[in-house]
Image (cartoon, rainbow, N blue to C red; front, side):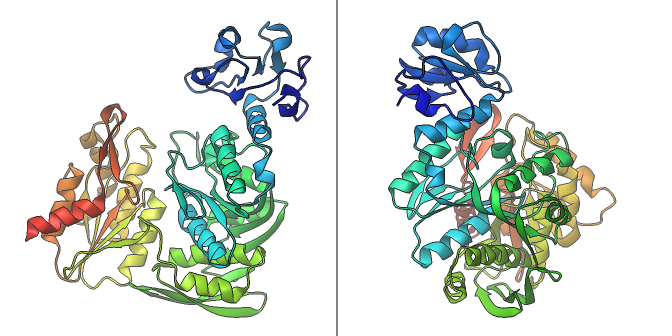
Length: 478
């Protein structure tokens, strides 16, 4: 591809007819004829390697300041933005060939995106998915490491979706992806805001910074759906200027759920909009999931899917791995696995499960290392509000001392009378929960969800699937 074909948004060069063999911001991937984009990261500044990349064979470099490299440097005000645009152009702008649906917020993104994809697929529309658990192209599964892939990887994924015949791409859009401009020039047909609760404050300086990052999505979308049951959702609804609609499970809104009935086997509710009500039944329990499904239905209606086709698809949807997932035990107690790893998510899952718990609600949880430490005591307080017993353990300790993390968690239980046990090793903690469970108890394993690993010191990943751990524990009980 010619260099001039890659340069958009005012980028100029005197060597535009040069053939480019690849585009990258990674020094390890530069080869003869590459276009190297200098990006300043947390620990490395690509500008420092620009001259070396030219010596290595790069045809040109894109940079934010004059590096004295003559006509082989292309100046821009924003390297990250330029890189996103270049990656999109490299793949022929696949983001323009898909109907894009984006979902952002702290909790609920995975469920909403998966429900939307399921509805679209059931109604004959091949759809791609970009998500926390994995990426999908129709029925093809592609494992992922980031909620929002890096710019090149994202455009490459979109390109594969287009070539596979996808009409839609449904995407979880993270605050990291927005701030780091990984989405490039992607414009979303519809976008959803779920909620905002404390998370990622190890990256964002405070909640306002976190909110402003999420808000960026709604400057690049045609139609927004905002959850006004959330304080930040109400604020966002009042601040954005695109076409918008509110949704709620607690109050009147443009779109709302009414007559909600929750059971351990699922939920039912009336989906209400424009003066009409439609009965919806789902296999997914929890009021928070009613909110998620309400948002998904609203998006699919906006996409032109008939309401009858939407409802019939929702009724057969089985749920998302690690999201209020019941792990079979064959015993007289229940084990639920959920990804809840924020105070608000803990509240949502426990409040929901409490409604159908016959005996005790036991919550087993920990907090990740090298992540926002301020939420640790808040997680404990949230769990203590609805659980009858807590088992405090490890999550992904990374390079922190697991016992030191637990010590910070326990400060949130000061003044609380809730009984709790501390079992640092997560496997042993799950065994302990199973061993002490009584008839009618529900054990919620919070924090890991879909993850089948634990991250230990030195970024060491070990295999750890809670479904397998529960099965092993049940064998020990025999």
